Length: 71
Image (tube, rainbow, N blue to C red; front, side, top):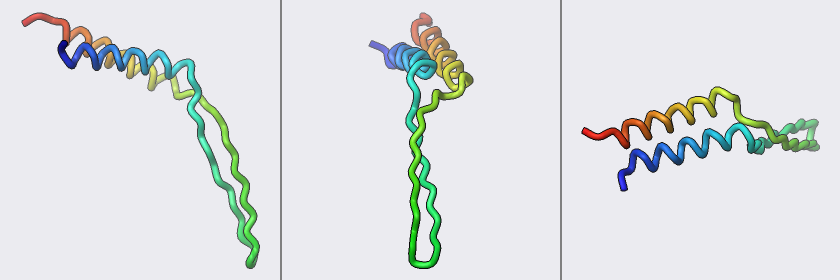
């Protein structure tokens, strides 16, 4: 099987999942006062921007079109 159509399908799947599955993001906030250090870790889950999903889906469609096209 050709590699370009497989890449297209993979990009389509990743693009569709980017609209649904949130990505974890961790922030570390720390303050040092003298010898003491206070640390706060926050974790949030945010979805990727819609533009990322659109670009992935567009790349998948283009890969499928150019991969399936006969010469």
